Length: 289
Image 1 (cartoon, rainbow, N blue to C red):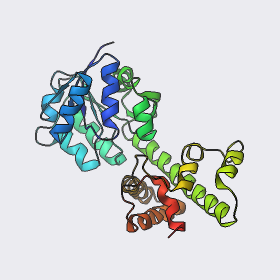
Image 2: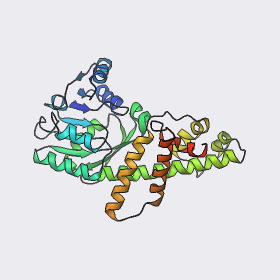
Image 3: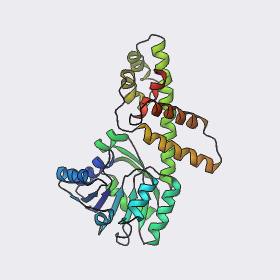
């Protein structure tokens, strides 16, 4: 099935995701806040680009977005030259941005008022997953809107699942980020213990990675953490944004997430060390001064 698709936001994740849509045979028009990046993407893919979200969204079956935070989503949806006003009735907006669940419900309601579908669809897998077309996509929204979007999501999703109504995808992404934060902190402490005891950390990881301690973070980040390499895409600044969303939701629900709150503060330490744009595995830097 060939769909007419707009893609809003060509950052680290959006740039390859939009390209996968082109390779899957869809007719894609991209928008990016900085026009030169959209022009470069269009030249590389042979697809189109537009000057505003509204221009990109006109006559499209689907409009996908992967921008920065809640305010950015509002801007591309309902702001000046936003997509919603230009979308045809029955079209579906899919938001890949990691936002609050409240924002997803707000945008779903605004979309419904205009006869549009809305799916909150945050992703996991990082830059490498986006480039390989192997993302996990957690979705919330009306079943009909999800069904309309699913064929396009298959272009870059290895696992795509609807988990409930609007906001469910964003809540699932919160769960995902809590898991990552805890695992990276545990891995950082384990490697710190290993090196402090004088063991060969690479050798230890190769052994324990074959047992119950194995994780994606161990497989993909332990050796680079040992070498002090932290340039793998998902920045500490973005993780702190995400953990802030998690902790806000915890307060709303009246629950305590003590480990998440602690690791959030540890990431603040990494920021204070200048690690704003380093990836999340840089958490180990706290043990190295």
